[in-house]
Image 1 (cartoon, rainbow, N blue to C red):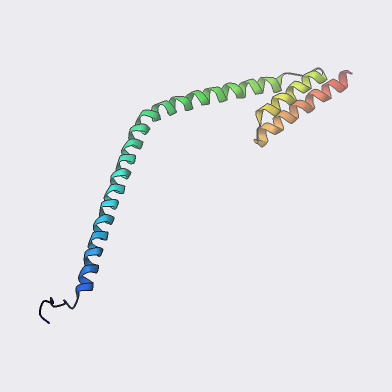
Image 2 (image 1 turned 30 degrees about the vertical axis):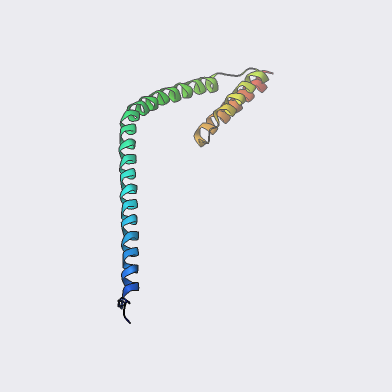
Length: 124
């Protein structure tokens, strides 16, 4: 028995503890790195948002103006009397381009077409 070092009764547990501690340290480092990247992303989003929000607001105002102009142009077309099939076709093409799902507008367009057809049938 000479020359042999005495065996430690929990040597296996001590080795497992060392592996556990190493794994824990690596996981903590990874978690820290992830949190750091998330913070960088949040900061980049804040910077981007602060730069883009005024531009978005300006674009939305322009969009609203263009939508109003579109509505006025559509209204003028529908209020203008069609005297021929060609005129009716203009109104149909305008309606097709509008892609509306607004029921009230659909009724306005239909009434415009019906009024024009009635007027054409009376004068013909």
